[in-house]
Length: 281
Image 1 (tube, one colour):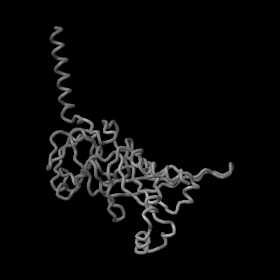
Image 2: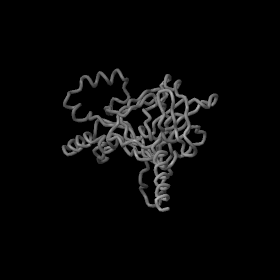
Image 3: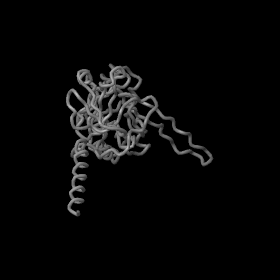
Image 4: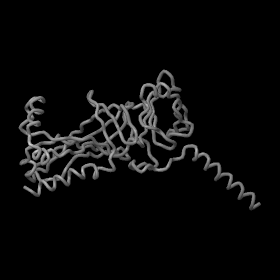
């Protein structure tokens, strides 16, 4: 009798392993941040019709199999999405993905994105401009830059990396700030674009939603009250993504991002260069 119960227990454990194996998480890729198993669905946005879940065994160039957070695995045709370039990233078994279904054909996925691949730190290079050149035309700015001594360029025109880090639970963080005193900032002849204070991200019908808030200053007097910061919402379209590259479109302009190890590493060189510059003042 004891052996009979043992065999039944082994059979149950084996069956459970097979079920999990069909949608198992693959090994963590070293150049992705936080590729841990998602234990909670994406925070819902009103009007979002995307389906979220795990990519399952059986997915191919023509079929995507998703295990929704609520329900059983479902197969969708994705041939048209592949042809239209609407498969963003490379979904692998166990990856957290999101899809959009054709309302006129519920067997077809019109958009697929690998959210596990999307998470992490993405940046693009930014150069400052001379403060006195801001009101000049782009042509005049280029002419002034061409006549500028290389020593001045090397001192002040230090490239920085701007962008964002996308984390679990819809949390986002801005990339691009360099710590320095406000006095030195005022004395500098160059000025960098403003860094957006990203704090949240989400998906909405195949588009990336980034939420940023205004940076608030401490009140000058004790009786002054803080003003509640206003949220700014940016809607970006996906063009392309692989392990190291991401292309998004914002207000008709394409922005090419590169993956960084983390937010601290993104501006490590710029921070060191800025520190040397500040020590000379």
